Amino acid sequence: MDGRKTPLYDEHVKLGGKIVNYAGWLLPVQYEGLIPEHEAVRNKAGLFDVSHMGAVKVSGKEAEKFLDYLLTNDISKMADEQVIYTFMCYPDGGVVDDLLTYKFGENEYFLVINAANVEKDYDWIVEQQKGFDVTTANESDETSILALQGPEAVNILQKLVDIDLSQIKAFYLKRDVKVAGVNCMISRTGYTGEDGFEIYVDNEGVHKIWAELMTVGEDFGLKPTGLGCRDTLRFEATLPLYGQEISDKISPLEGGLKFFVKLKKESDFIGKEALVKANDEGLKRKMVGFEMVGRGIPRDGYEIQKDGKVIGHVTTGYMSPTLKKSIGNALLEAGETEIGNEIDIIIRNKPAKAVVRDRKFLANR
Amino acid sequence: MKVEKDLLYTNDHEWVKVEGEFAYVGIADYAQHSLGDIVYVELPEVDDEFEKEEAFSAVESVKAAADVFMPVGGKVVELNEELIDEPALLNTDPYGNWMVKIELANKEELDELMNSEDYEKFLAEEE
Image 1 (tube, rainbow over the protein chains, first blue to last red):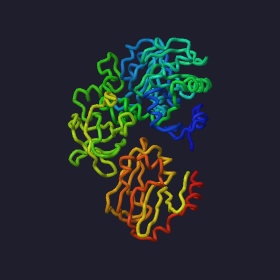
Image 2: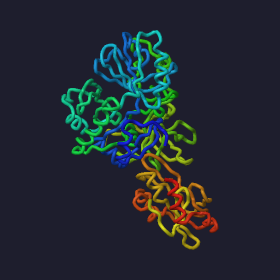
Image 3: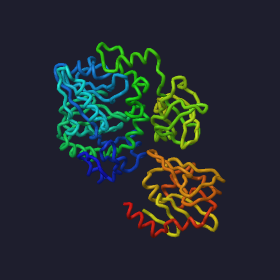
Image 4: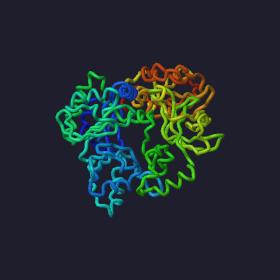
């Protein structure tokens, strides 16, 4: 199989990882199995190699001003060492990418972007930075990233650091933390809906950290976890995936993510005019959750009908490992989004009954 | 990968067990293994007729859905309905759990399938 390897590739193979090509990278979709790995993260802890993700450093006198123009969330309100989720939009309100923005300090930021979009994003950023006093650097190749996720994540990591991790709140970061003696940046973030940390380190140091976490984690029920459960976990936690819940054709407002688009922030931003207009006029499509009534598993891209008329499509669907039910997200015409609305998911050319529900999939687990 | 003698196989990894004018159809060990934990099985209806190589069923893991194709043409006469409530049976014992029993439309089509020895060679090349 062709593709790029992260520094930990041989580790994944040794652990029995089933390797797939994801966004040009050879990564494990699962080791032991998707379901036990999913459950490990919900109940104990899982360790993901997410070194395929991209990283862009933004620095300079006008870094804040530039990022407030580039991104939809309000960068001017960020505290030092804070992390926020935001979008980078096109002028028409479509999404270039969704990302995390890390504020290291005044004039110094770090953007974490999707693997599949690194080149596109960096080209876009460089194009937009003209006229701003900023420097950008694509550090994707030099940055390895581990995601330690699950209720036991904090207890595992605490064994390997000499700082008190309870001092790092959710969506905050700390630089120059020694993890097993290796210099890292860590943040209390993740993509699973559980507590956890993401660890940023160079391509050499990542080996030691992976090995030490796996060893220390044994007593806590830590499992190596693959891309398969990464997607089911993020889906159950209502976290969007670029290309499915949001894309160049699905705006963050349509994706139900208005909270991260500060339409009233002081500065202008790319896409503001189009998004304000769409918001004022009322959205034509909206993201909803649904639950199957009939048999079948909904999958992304499946068509949705009401009385034989197409009203939207499935953006993500699964037999949820936590709920043991077939559920999904759907982008539907605005008139069809009421909770309780009966809809048909077209599975292999046949309609299967489903009903619109809220997206708080994990609320009553 | 386990291969059972006395069965016939397709290169899509379905198996056939012939009994007179009838045949049982299921998925091979290789198929269940590459799919992973099976969480859903969709079966056709009794009396549905399928041509050789037509999709008659689907098996799904959490991650993916896969069609299952008819190794030979025929009419469905019986379903293994146990699979609807316990799809994982296809993981634990793929050769012990047939999916459908069919009445063969044309027995000559069986000649185009692989016996277990040919199938083992085919698997070796697939690896």
